[in-house]
Amino acid sequence: MSGPAVPLVLSRTAVSTTAILIVKFALLFACVALASGNPAAGKPWHWKSPKPLLTPIGPVKSPRIVGGAEATPHTWPHQVALFIDDMYFCGGSLISNQWVLTAAHCMDGAAVVEVVMGAHNIRLNEDTQVSMTSTDFTVHEDYGPFFIRNDIAVIKLPSAVSFTTEIQPVALPSSDIAVGTIVTPTGWGKSSDSASGISNVLREVDVPIMSNAACDAIYGTVTDGNICIDATGGKGTCNGDSGGPLNYGGKTYGITSFGAAAGCEAGYPDAFTRVTYFLDWIQTHTGVTP
Image 1 (cartoon, rainbow, N blue to C red):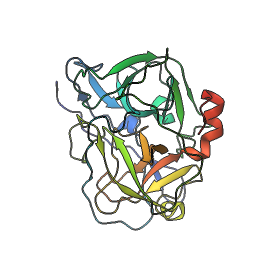
Image 2: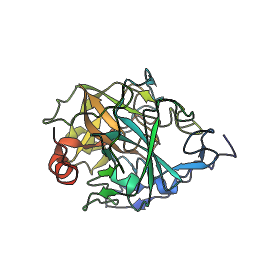
Image 3: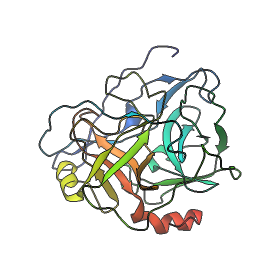
Image 4: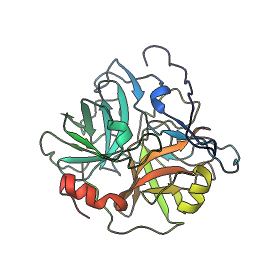
């Protein structure tokens, strides 16, 4: 790592009489310098508005430690790393040989993105990695950063990527999964609130789906376009995981979207964009279907 980390600074904006507050990670810059050989070599990297934050209105849960473990290398071959505007970092999912699914808040206002596929340790220049630079991406036309609505975007690669054991597309689901189902979000996000930067290696965590009603009781802004996980027990996503997949049964059911302003270790639910809600939009812009 080169240079000191920039302290996190919270800025809050009231959005309703219920005192729900949105905190955008554009105002939470934390520097991450990645090692030589990587697209980020020698540069400070920030999270591009990942995991916009809502101040929960429900009861406070006990503090927790962000759980999970290092994934077995290349068990999630659709997971990609996104280096945005030579400055910001997010995750995404390869859904065909030329399309990547990610969060709108990652790509909103962006000019260029480097997509790194086939990676496990993003601080290394691994032989399995393939990088492509794209300026062709679409953010949902009704993306609402204020309430974090329609948080979905797609990136078109400049040419079709050749599939390998380490680079494979993920299927889209045709129907939802039940509350209580154990799912697996993946990403290179921070492993704790105190971590100085994102993880070197891809991490995974198994967590249950919770009802939208229970999630909305915490945030007050959850819609049918969201799917939430229950973070009770010390498990969840964190800064840097934004745009990455919520995995189950070889399909991606969610796109990492937002969490609690109280921090990754506060025990509140994590919210994702519900992929099944946006299947028509995805097909319209990419031609990809379940």
